[in-house]
Image (tube, helix red, strand yellow):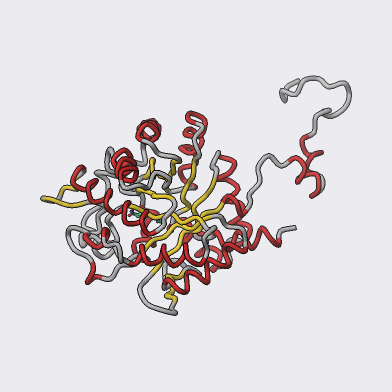
Length: 338
Ligand code: PBG
């Protein structure tokens, strides 16, 4: 027949995929993927002080919390079934310098926040970023000399940063700096310091992305950043290279790996999961959040549906979990979902 449909036996097709979509109960029954609060890591910003929250203009609905307020907010997250939080500090200008020295101060904001969280909520997982950008007056993740980000010298500080955070009670260290060889060095340093039980979630495939803009506002590093991060973060054009990054991080001792940003890089997640079968996470970053919220505020997208649909897309691509600013919102929606 000219339309390409084989001559039928006088009826329409026997296989009709719409049949399994005809009712909500049936759609639930045949669903291949499911999102639950167990999949969510809540990414949060902290700032110095007491009893205060500060709105972040480019991330409507997201605030920086003082440590005491974060404990309250995290209590709600625990009640909603969220397993872990990932912390990011806002560091005042006076505490930034070219060496990022504040990163290794055992009394810094991060360490005090970790201790407060662990004391109040011992069953909540706490993940800490390792990188110098909140502390470095150049806004870079590493040390700079003659305009170059130094690899091996940076790693020495990152190892100390990992140790002070582990000593404060952090459960998982998440190096986001993209220096070569840092996972092996951090693993060794943690082990030697007696923190053999502290895990490493490496930002294995972290791309030099325009989607990090609002984050840099939120931690106050944006105004400081000189140039871009393209000499250490990955080029968006590449995908084989992501597999090499992951292979190295696994060999160096990473317990789990992460892809970042999220939605525009789900092809990378899928390849990693298929190739390595390692616990694989993705970070729905600040710019992704801002994009969804801005459209929702304009009335152009349905906020709740878009949150759940994007998070489910991460699961479908193969993510074991998602780092997201929407974790609390999503977990409450999952509670009330029909
Ligand atoms: C930096 C770091 C960044 C993010 C997490 N850790 C920004 C950057 O690389 O400049 C971005 C997260 C986000 O955009 O939500 N170490």
